[in-house]
Amino acid sequence: MVKRYETRVVKPQLNNLAADPFIIEAAELLRAGELVAFPTETVYGLGADATSTSAVESIFATKRRPADNPVIVHIGEVDAVADVGDASDPRVLLLARHFWPGPLTLVIPAREPVRTAACRGLGTVAVRMPAHPIALAMIRASSLPVAAPSANLSGRPSPTTAQHVLDDLETKIPIILDGGPCDVGIESTVLDLVGPEPRVLRPGAVTQDELSAVLGCSIARAEGAALSRSPGTRYRHYQPSATVILVGQHVSDASVSHLLSRIANAGTLVGYIAETSPTEPTSSVIYLPVGHEAGALARCLYSHLRHLDARGVASIVVRAALADDPVMERVHRAASLVLWTDEEVESFHGDVSRAPSS
Ligand code: TXA
Ligand code: MG
Image 1: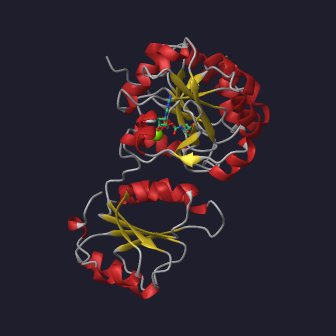
Image 2 (image 1 turned 90 degrees about the horizontal axis):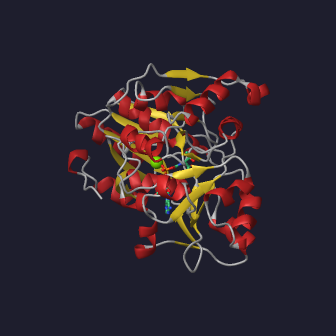
């Protein structure tokens, strides 16, 4: 039977987290096998006791997550990595000491009881120590490793505020710890340390260059068969309901304005996410700005996609630079169409219902 809750959104006090009543309550809920949504520096997580098969099962039921897609296990101290996995490979502690707490997830051989409860038969565990004081206080107070995927319904953009979690999971979970908007805004880098060569399974804020510098070897992105190690990559993530069109930063303002008006003329509301506002704003275009500083698009992307979906836009134009940047991987995954030059933009007919899907 599916339980219904009066979901509460609560704000732990940052100045005395270890004694905060909401942290203590969240830890008790986790120990009782319940789910708790909590902030991390990347995105909000939906946490459960990673040593309990039934608690982890309720994550899958609540998110409607595909059964074969394993979840990340979160720990509160670097040394706790040896409780959930085999940390005998010296690269594990080398990387952990360098990047934790932080947005790096390591895939290593799993240990019981986490292996049976949280690893979906893979024999490996993805583990990270998050860099958010509320997450760390909650994990430490629970004395448990905490299994937590992103706290969205499967297929929706990951949540970067407590309100996003509430939008997806109200009545499905007892409590959401509110830590304000997430600093990073996209999910952690996932690094596979099980295969013969370390491989990035999912790009994130910790870059391949930073990993290479610490390990002293080159690190590649996993491709093809190697990616099957990360079942999550088989699913289409980050999928808003609207059609997403990615337009290159170097396309002229005039071409972008033509594009927006052609789409709007087809009778639809259109969202526009870019660093500068459209030169010919109309009431059919909802413009959401992106800051100019490093990491600005990552911080606002999911929030903007959710906002525009809620406004009922039929299409969303994202204008961004083609950079080898983890946030662009998310934009590409969400996009049905990429228009990179003025010519490509001008020749697009503007009927988003006929945009090819990837
Ligand atoms: O930033 C993050 O990583 C956030 C916060 C909450 O920590 N969590 C997150 O979890 O994004 P989730 O479940 O949405 O994504 C986990 C990814 C999936 O692509 C999954 O397939 C992969 O990690 N993964 C989990 N366990 C794995 C394993 N044993 N081997 C390979 N990939 C694994
Ligand atoms: Mg996710």
